[in-house]
Length: 83
Length: 434
Image (cartoon, rainbow over the protein chains, first blue to last red):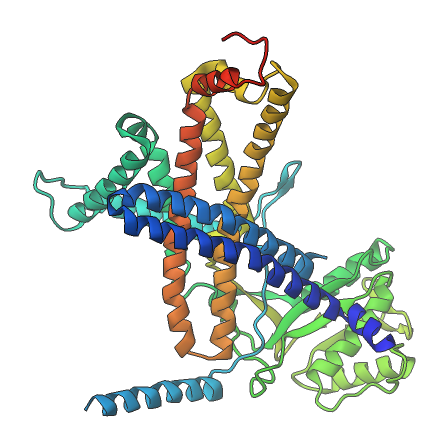
């Protein structure tokens, strides 16, 4: 137990926290982006003429989903470098 | 024949990896989030007017774009060729893209700003991938800086309010310009980090001086060891030994003592027997190389600036198109629900700024860190692939920024009559005019 606490105060806790924040935070956006792009490709296959609008909306959606991952990255950066 | 080529390329790649590991393995790279200051400026009420390396890069990008455009469109011809053709072609492509999304009239209205965002971000991101970025810099003297801090604390009779950390490399004098890192002690050991010196919270200037002198001795004098290892307290003997060891060596840092005790810092343990007025570095010194160029959007200030510009221009377009009716979207007191929805809209308007800023910053900064780490992990080979990925990310992020601004602008200039009509027509809304 003492060793564990010592490790936490030595900065291992920080590394662990940053890693967990980023790792767990990346799951959601990854699933989201995967589903988004998959559906977009499906739509593209069904209706190739609508390529422009499908692409635009897909990139928009990906950007929004990705933003969540960016928040996780931000949290990880703050844990690792600022706190 | 094919098999020979395959075998040869595998051998070649492995050779590069081995050469990289043996010859070019450097120290553990240092990741610094804040942009480094190149020119220190005066401070004022609104903040300090420092010039950072990301700013310099941004100016370089602006100058590059200006000169390129000027050269390409200097002598315009009706039938474009060469550079003019390229510039016109790219702009036409962008115009078509914007018009596809926003329609002809609105598209043309928004085009200049959207295209400026796209081109500036794209070129900035690709500039950041040039090999001399993060590599060539000016050296910043850390060794003297630490003593200066100690001196200041002693003069003002203050204790250090928080733990201050100084990271640096031990390097040879290089006349102020250096590669990162020029020559680092322990280069045969890739895991070696830059040397670290920490002044703990609550130490006075004199106490910090003792720690610094001992730190210098452990760093620069081979075979110097502390007497007491059990508790980390320094003893008089340690400081004395460090002082002697340092001043005996020809190339080690010299502790310059002041006999008259006029200017300087006394030692906490030795008292006036070690009254230091300066520390001189005749041989190797403690310094950092501050890169002159760094990718523009690996600095969150720059992305925030862009996000704010995007925010204000969208609000401006909204007001321009709808007059003060635009604000009805946010302040609508016709029913509690509408008030709440309006407040949410207002909030999301500001959250957009944040996510704009951090999306770009996160992507570019993460890319920089990835390239840096892989350069030191597996030199030459994997980095090339990641470079390709980063080219793609740079493009996508520029496109996303411009596209999102365009979409938000379209949402802002949209009339909300239809929407209100729909809401009024909904059955749960009673008493409103239909």
